Image (cartoon, rainbow, N blue to C red; front, side, top):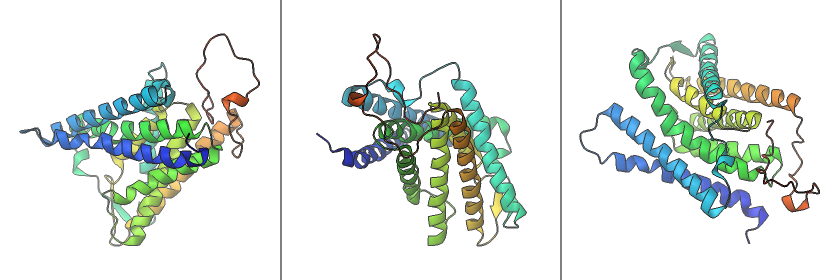
Length: 290
């Protein structure tokens, strides 16, 4: 039997392995001849998302023996609204951080050429951001990893593990970071990004708000401004500040609705004294406000 102390380790390892296995789909898509760049992004994104859904379903149903809907991506009446709200919030966070960077004199407004064509942006950039990164990463990190760690660890530990692991993986991401300082700040920015995404998960008990925020952020990040020479770190600091503030505000709003003891461990199912209900109920999600 696996040790409870090792659970964060092996579940984190499984999450990373599952995400990379999902991304590996891109290699198979690249073997298709005669495909345009736009078509490649769309087909690759569809493949990555389909693989992530399939793998998380297998882990939940076959390995864990539990419902896939526990991961928070089940379709509901509020799904579309929360996804759109998250998209707007993610885009607004980028705009706010970029505006702060420009106000500090560290960058100039320089919209990317991809934003010039609205139809192309809506048909390629938006779906690619949603399918290549937002849905797969949310399923593994704020879905699988957060769901299971929240059942055995205090909320603050669950938030820390999911956010830091998500941020640490971005050390291998392509970015404008050149120096070691910039690369570390880039990881800090990704960690703050993970923090606000897990806050979205805790605020709603679902992934749709987080998926939307993730997609909205990726649609505009590094597409609106051109940092001055040697000032890329200022842009990263502005992003960290805005994302952290957004996460704190989201969690404070959730805390007002349903106070949560951040240091308390969840009660093990076997130790609960509440009589069993006649109907089978889904296991509660620790930290969820709904």
